[in-house]
Amino acid sequence: MNTPDSRKIVLVTGASSGIGAATAERLASDGHHVVLAARRTDRLDALTARLTTSGASVESVQLDVVDHDAHRAVVDAIVTEHGRLDVLVANAGVMPLSRLDAGLVDEWRRMVDVNVMGLLNGIAASLPHFTRQGSGHLVTIASIGAHEVPPTSAVYSGTKFAAWAITEGLRVESPAGIRVSTISPGVTESELADSISDPVAREAMVAYRAHAIPASSIAGAVAFSIDQPGDVDVNEIIVRPAAQR
Ligand code: NDP
Image (cartoon, rainbow, N blue to C red):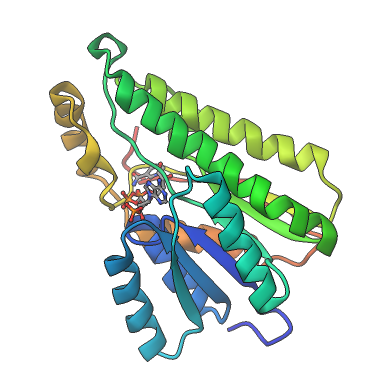
């Protein structure tokens, strides 16, 4: 459990399900103050109520990460309320996998909007505060898809390679007080595959998902990264099912 001195103010995007929800729960139970953000407020309200009942310090806010102004307003409101933002967990993401020859342009655009522009909007909103504070921590939830490109994953992996590169770019451009961590999960239990409309990709996911690990496994990697001393910067962790090849 963190002491009042080590308690951080954390924003988790995509906190309404899966890895984001598990991360919010883990960080709140570790004693941090967690702001849960996503579009589905019914989910956020239910999780926030449950965590509050168990004594956690949490709040929730509706946010579409694609909306730059809305992202900035959410971050600014956190800083106004709490005096600072210590950690942004940029987790919101979508994965409507398909082969390139399926030509699902609208789904490609959606992945670029959420997985790339959503991350950039989070950086644009948070970095001015991190710079003024002289400290801050971006935790990007990328993917094993930031390291490999299986069939049907060309565009999704493209967005996750981009997320990896953008996060690394922030590291090399930033002073020592600003830390960056890329967490790259393998197959993890969540709702992520529900948005796959392409039948070939849906079929391919069935075998993959048989080995899925709990979302709490990824939350543990996030918690490890942010609880390091300020002079220790955990830049990447890959967490995948032991059986995933
Ligand atoms: P889920 O589908 O369970 O969660 C995705 C979250 O992103 C939801 O909370 C959803 O909330 C949110 N989200 C989607 N679009 C937006 C948006 N425009 N604005 C704000 N929030 C949004 O999947 P996961 O938990 O698995 O996904 C979390 C991250 O982990 C993603 O970045 C994903 O790419 C990554 N990942 C997951 C893996 C897995 O196997 N599960 C493997 C590798 C990486 P709402 O719809 O309420 O807005």
